[in-house]
Length: 405
Image (cartoon, rainbow, N blue to C red; front, side, top):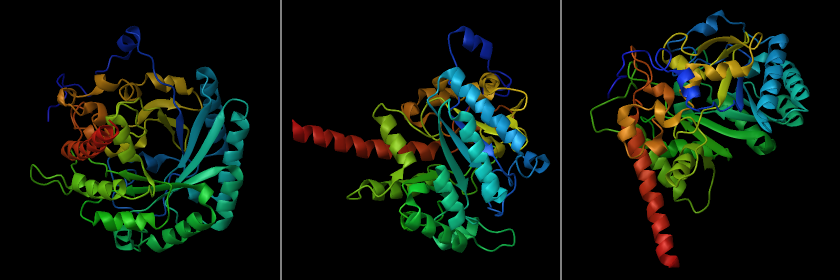
């Protein structure tokens, strides 16, 4: 795959943001703010991009976000919503494991955010958790405060326990299963969905069936973070697409179901994009990414999947204690993810599927020495998956048009 042709680290050293602005380009304001309320985790997942990959800045940050920091973040959100006339913003409580901050701390944080933004915009609050500490009193509080909960799970017990373990080596499935049984049966209105990291060495249909047990309203399948300098451990011979094969098996099962059992964001995005619509995720499409991260010390960072690439890849040099969010809108790392086709490698521009693929996940394009202007390390897999989905959907659309003629 071709590297960046100008031999400078792209975009940080070679993207001309002033020239883009002079040409008429304008940034898309942030809609989502990811708040790192707790910097540590009670699990030791073997694929975790925060703790096991290139960037280790978590070690030097406060364990728990202080109230002064989260109140500053809330004020910045309100300023941003007012400046850009945003009717709604989303706050995502993240970590580490955010439930380690404690139920009362989280309740105080959510109350402060809602109070600050009450007269500015509607606030959608979500928390992404491993589920281990989730219990009825916590869910009662979340329901009371209008907080929805996403849980990470990798399918059946054996697969989950292989990857998502406690630091002492014990598997986490039993604890997460208890939480999900409670969430799906007693608190379904607070259930945002499941996040599952793809493992193509496992049985895809068994994984999907295990996830469906909890009747999730949404499933997000995420590719494990890898790049050209640190490729997936199963990378094999040319012509093999193990991730595509795994996802295609689930797509066919999902697509052929007599009724929709759940929403699968990746599949729905590919379908929407192939029909000329818009996507909702970072994995496909060319829509501007409008997400910003606030770390536990108040530092404003780029999306934290970039921690999988190189140390300080997320750094902006900004903080909610001293800067507004508009300051981050001119950072090359933000701009590169909002300029669509202009950010893609030449190989991607020449590909007929680029309006759907969008070059793949940004973190998966990285190559040490030249940056992110490369195709995704999962390029072959994404091509095979997208082509399969397009073929199936377009055949059905054509058949319906013929039958109604």
